[in-house]
Length: 243
Image (cartoon, rainbow, N blue to C red; front, top):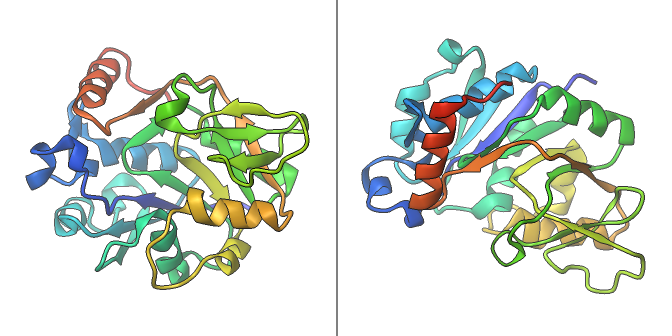
C-alpha cells in the first residue's frame, strides 16, 4: 500500500526557545528564511505524502492561519486540536479519526532528517513491522536517549525499556521520524497525555510486536534550543536540504 498520510507533532510550547516561542509557535520559527514547518511539509511532499495532520495547542491558531488547507504547499492539511495538551502519544491517539485505516508517518515539528522519505517507507513495507523508526548513531546518549537494535535490525529496547533483553544490542538515537501501521492505535489509551516513546513503544515491544530500525547517517537538524536553532539556521542557509 502506498503511504500517503503523515502527522506533524506541533502542539508543544517550545519552552526551551522562550522568549521566541512566547509569541511564535516553535514550528513557525524562521530557519534559513522560512518557517521551519515549511521545510517539514516540503520533505513530506517530496516523499509522496498527500495528506498531513498537524496537532495544535500552543498558539495553534497561528499555525492554522499560516498553513491553511495546505494547498500552497502541495498537500492537504487537517488539524487536530488539543486542550489540554496530550504529549506525543496522546496527540497521535487523538488524531486517530484522521489517520486510521492506513499506515502513516509521524515527524516531530522541531527536527528534520535529510533523507529520501521514500526509502524509509519502502523499508517499512518490506519488513512488515508495526512500526519502523529512523535511527542514527547516538552522539549524546544522555540528551537523546538510546534505542537498541538486535543483529537483525529489530528494535528491542527504547529508553531502557523493557530492561530484560537477552540478545546483543547496538545503541542508536531516535531523531523523531517513524512510520506506523494503523494497528498501533490499539496500543494507545484515549484522552490521556502520554509519551509515545516512553509508553507505547515499551507496550508494543513487551508484547513481541515487530518494530524495526532503519539506520541512516544522513544530516539531521533540530531547533529545540537557542543554540540548536542558531546552528540549524546557519546550516540550512549554507546548504539547504536536498530532499
